[in-house]
Length: 259
Length: 231
Image 1: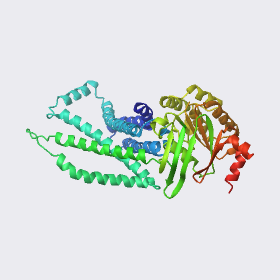
Image 2: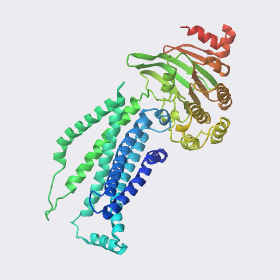
Image 3: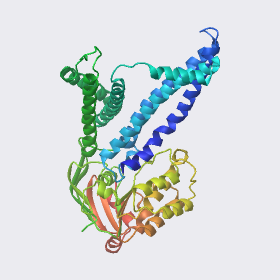
Image 4: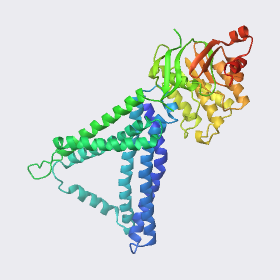
């Protein structure tokens, strides 16, 4: 059932984000082209391109956050809950679906942000008339750099930590919404208050357990051993995510009262 | 075994008691009218049967199970509001229903949608309130469920559609199912009801056969309702 739910949930968020991604990509290319053709930083076209790129980037960020909140609150705590909660699916699957879908779209948004950076460079490359061979030579040079030992391992751990942090933040938002929903009125205010309380809770717990788990250790060649930072941080994020998931599940199972 | 068994059910919202020690047993093969004025507890009872609300005390069972994943497989519910995702069209919703409910009959749904002249290309958000209600009802009645919980199914539609809906309810439900229609439009539904449950201030004040009321009391359900709930 989780797969079926995800099949319908992914497009629900994507329908608003996909057109923005396309607009963002065009704005990035335009920025690259105008940046190179521009004679001075105050050039009108360049200024317009920068404003356009920044505005779309902001819109994508804001809409991503709004969609994360809105998909959860309307589907599980609002009017659409009258439809979703009558499907023969457990609450864990409902929460899991929202989490997976939101995580996928946040990761895609970050990837698109990276791609738009490349498109800015591509715009400059086109404007400067740099050939494909030269670009490929540049890539080869990047690969030939003598990177520090374990760089790929640390990169992998860093990516896992980033995804774990995204999941933790999304679950924190969901937990705050579910706790806030328990209030008899002013549920939005209650959710914001719950989110702040969860932030304080995380910071207090984090301050107590982080020093015992995370330590900055230097390896024999004098480079920081990131294993001692990344791995405990990933475990802490997973622990918080599990706690928030449990809060959502228990409240939806035992205290669901759709108004 | 009763299709629906409710024992000593109480539901409170803060200091307000919406349902007060309700006991009710409903057998299969009946169309039951859950009748009462606004705020009497009809919707609360239906939401409790769907697991959308949690009881303060007491128990509810559908086919011997508490409301949950198992009961949701066999309960078809029409809520009293627009609940379907507003960006979806009728074919998308039919596909979704077919994905989640094994008892969903797509051909039956398509027939009803065509009969009611619903534009299949329009997303929900572009439909009128009445059309949304019709589409929701088509999807619900196209299931071959054990229990149908219809909360105000005729409240927001025109009289012609009202007749179609009532005909659909009679013709589509099966002998093994129980249909609960919650409404305060008694005169419109009276002809299709087998049983009548009067609910007042969160309490069941009467549960009788519609025919028994007419024969024994010599008056229509609508008239009796007006007497019982006289302001």
